[in-house]
Image (cartoon, rainbow, N blue to C red; front, side):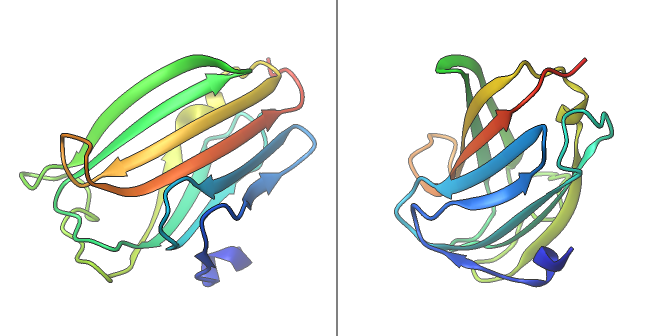
Length: 155
């Protein structure tokens, strides 16, 4: 909870723990060359607990968020497991209140992640999350390299 009150300026390459428990370790680094004012918190820190994860995000974007496309690439123990793209903001009938945020304004939001209900085999997951301000994926506004280590099988 304390983390929700802080804005932390991270420099590229500095690792930040999202959470650590006996069954799950999650951390991230920035994979782009720009420092960001960014904070992400995840509760509960467990794969065994099948409740929905609750995420809190605070971010001050370095450009206007009129268009926002996210790209997820997930590797499990070194093998590509998932590639997923989603346009969150298009400038037309956007369903997220964060769409239209101007450069320098604070985005502070909470949302549920249903992934905690998935059965994750024991191992290391690497997730590259890229955010773009255009559909052609040329103008990157954020890049995170997320590491998730599952320390026990879930059933």
